[in-house]
Image (tube, rainbow, N blue to C red):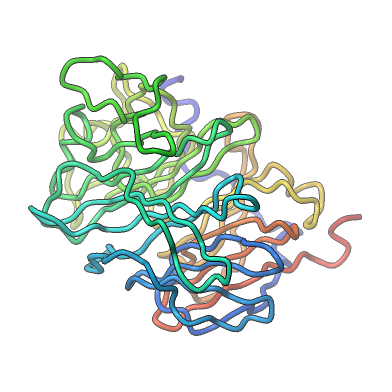
Length: 369
């Protein structure tokens, strides 16, 4: 990928017709909700960071917490985090979720698979299929977004654990990496470092900081975003074997000011972001728009939530280039944690608060015309 051409700061953010979208509340009373997945009949599964998973009924009613959720280390940024349903959920009722797993030495991000019971009241056959190594004592940077590829394998984003940021550049650990495993937890056989001495075979890409957004693009490529330190939040396409630079290159700086490392933004062999934000917006959640519900101009757009500035970003994409950013819902006043397109064609948002909400994005009048 070219060095600086695609790494321009945020582009023109002129108001557009898309700014007239509004939200309606689907459900309230969610404590630090992190992820939403759609399980049919208008129902949704939602994770709450303290360690609960609930069903949201079609009428917005919340179930009691599901039984069978493993113990989570709900400290700092940790807890019960991302959740997806399996591609064959209709037949197998499998769900995949990730969380901060306590253990010897501290905690780390774990990926588990389970079966949702027929009455949707509990998780059955819960099995941890991947656990980030090594565990460290940290409250920060768990990453933890899951994407299922067309061959059913699972991508998982893993944070650098903050104080271990230099680990993101080495292959003997899972810090600051994207990994790819099969449904039984074994490394995908086509992973780029399989068979390399000293390298963990699950690793897909390296040089990441704290990735809290991931999704498949229209061409089935893996798109991710990650938090920069103080500036330099990035959007990337995470490709096999590539190094995305952290902490050797970054568009951010140390908290309180000052360069990170040599204070450089480019270096041979290290990938440039497709897009970056300075100041940081603290991105979380990520989804491509495929629905025509919001008009043809929205199709192919990439949606990203902002925790810090409490809005929804719509990035207009041309291939692998970000052409423009529209800031939507700037008066929302809530931290946007997750963004998903539902099977009904609507966009759904989760807000991160002690009394958070599940929101449905309402298209502008006449959007399909």
